[in-house]
Amino acid sequence: MPEQVPIHEGVEFRLDTRNEKYAWAPLANCVDVNPDVFYPEKDDTIGERKAKQFCVNCIVRVNCLEYALENNEFQGVWGGKNEKERVKIVRRRMRFLGSL
Image (cartoon, rainbow, N blue to C red; front, side, top):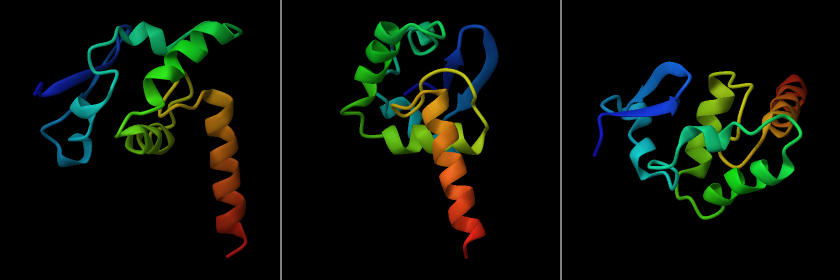
């Protein structure tokens, strides 16, 4: 298993899988896929659909999505969700927490 999994070619940050918090990363369906696939152009619905296909049956999809939400990843497809979908999740959670 690799010790670090790249997040995106244009970004130097990598998930350090030696950290237990990110141990899920090497199990992702997309581990060997070019990260650019997950950063389609803004209105590239076909590209977005292709990216999301990797997430459909991924056993760590929820972990990936939570990573993106916790780390304010505003670009790309993470855990099967695009930027707009993740913003909706964050807003929904904030409303819920505000109602407690």
